[in-house]
Length: 317
Image 1 (cartoon, rainbow, N blue to C red):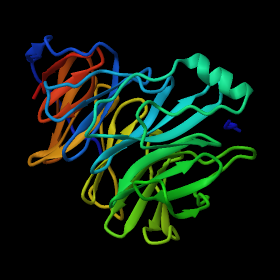
Image 2: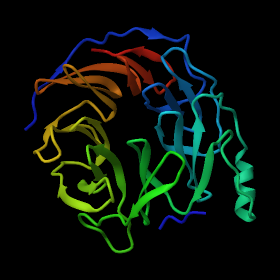
Image 3: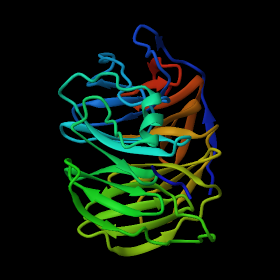
Image 4: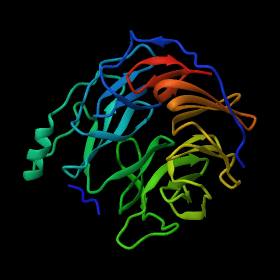
């Protein structure tokens, strides 16, 4: 059991997109965990669905009865974290990409396990382990993965969950008494790990041993909601809308307005493209262009957008 202790003008274009309902999901999607050979759609209630190329979706399942808070696709497996905040229960497991996934136990089993010693794994797990606090910022690093645990530390493991190193979470920025530092995202950049904190700070760690190399604070008008990476570039989505662009981790940020929060973003030849709260957008040559969307875009893949109603449509720009 875990225990939780300069803005440029914006251009609006006409609404235009084609919708395809034949391949709609049967659950409400939250995001897509992207991989080189396989992608995983994650639902709001812990549903999972593999696919290599939309619209060829595989079986839609729920291997474990809790919310999937983070996930990452490695070469032959997907690694995810499940958290039930009400029951204060957290678990991490790896599921194979080359076999069919299946539904797992019901939530009543977690309630029973909390009263006794039984531990239940997500259905079909290669390995599974319980966590003693809330996991954060799971990310792929080389052939393994890195993540943080609230109030505990940052961990680097191989694909079989063998620990490579662990370090305490560096204290960067202000920390009130009795609170914990929340980590939003971790990214690999060469031999460094760039750690983005919820208080708009950045810690740069040595990938070899997790030691702190340097740190900085971002001058943002709002709190970080999510961060997206392309090589050395970063797009930072802010909680109430707007984006910040870092062309390099050491450079100054530039701020741009958006009609609402950005939920997923990718870098293409012409610049950043994204989808989000009732709009699609693109940033090219320092200029933001957006188009309204009837729904909420939660993920982009090959200029196709998956919206929160489980339907695919063309990117609006």
